[in-house]
Length: 384
Ligand SMILES: C[S@@+](CC[C@H](N)C(=O)[O-])C[C@H]1O[C@@H](n2cnc3c(N)ncnc32)[C@H](O)[C@@H]1O
Image 1: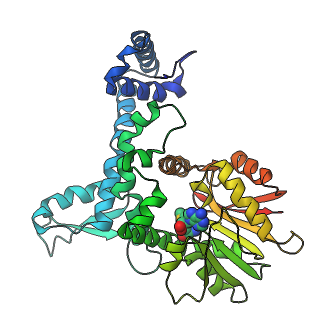
Image 2: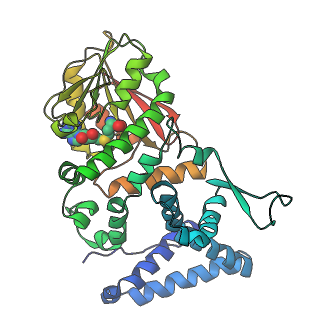
Image 3: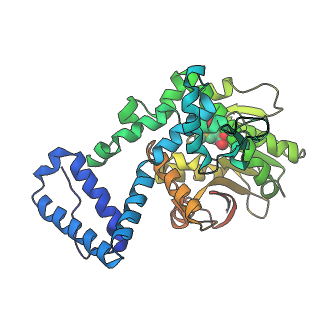
């Protein structure tokens, strides 16, 4: 079994890595076999104590514990959020509601205010919607189906084996495959319930995002193919905003078979790794992050064959995360890297600009333009 070796000076930045590593050591009893485990433990704990005494004693220790607990309990917030989007509450569980809602009001998912004492006994709380929870209801901009997909047991359960998976030498199956015995696409292909959950999650996300992305997408294009476009919510939004653009959707046969009939789009069953039908522009939303570099290069080469020259208006429009692009607040950055770990479970990757540049140039394109206007995601225009 291969193990990470710690060398060099421990500083504040590496403190979390050390603590994480200590947990890993405690968690995996068999790691006792590592020859220098005791030395490493001693080294790490000594450094932690040094950090705390120099950082101001007890308060620094308590702050450090708070950081740890805050991150350790973070998964409970996700689970509480799941209940607000998918689970009905049994009346007998009403006493738990106050505690559940406290978890969701503190971070601002819902608001809470005391009920009017003149009308009530003063002990009641009125919960309200915030901009975040407004995105979980209604028919416009409703992201509940996307959250239900991300927080589905199928995606959450593989994370319980993350530590074990990291022990194995590559090449290894993706964590999702280790957990379920099949790749994501196979599960979707063979399970109608998961398939509709997946497509609903994609459609909800596309509808939300395209309202914002649309301004950047449609100019100077006469025809567009939404590659791996699912049920075509993105292409539909483009077609509605730019009626002169002839829009079509390419996806696998079983996805095309279940696509709605009333979108006005042309659906083409096919494999993007084989070929992509010709169009002025190729649109790839939430697709490239599912595939390894070599596979992305194949997709991009097929895109290049499908579009005309840059002078004739040819371009590829990618909607995906560019890690490090856009807003630099900790919440934004953390969401991008969490998103990357989420997709790693299914063998995917969220790329930084250098990683995008490598695959774009390797596929034979000459220019690209990153437009970070979609929150944690960006639009990447790629030109031949
Ligand atoms: C994450 S979804 C994105 C769907 C859509 N672009 C959206 O944003 O709503 C990925 C899509 O890739 C499709 N896909 C997977 N392998 C494919 C292939 N070889 N050729 C074409 N589409 C494929 C899946 O069926 C799925 O619809």
